[in-house]
Length: 78
Image (cartoon, helix red, strand yellow):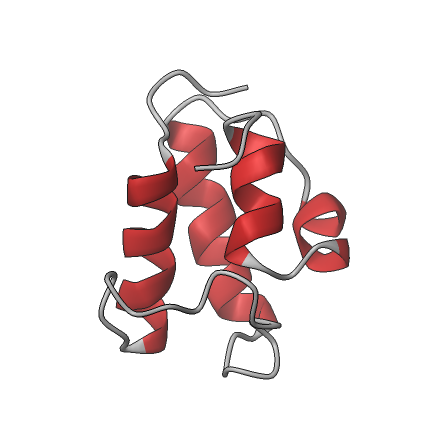
């Protein structure tokens, strides 16, 4: 788990790459259906690894929603 990551930072990072507002309700949307691609996913992965996350590309790709990523990276729903 990464101490520096929060649900808000995860949501903001995803919103930035998908050209969305972080306050929009998109936590349960399939991010691949919303325009996320493998290059953007790698960008997020590297950003979150730099913040201390220990997560793989496959773990994120298999759970393509903000809600699931928060559980995976932060360890709780927010």
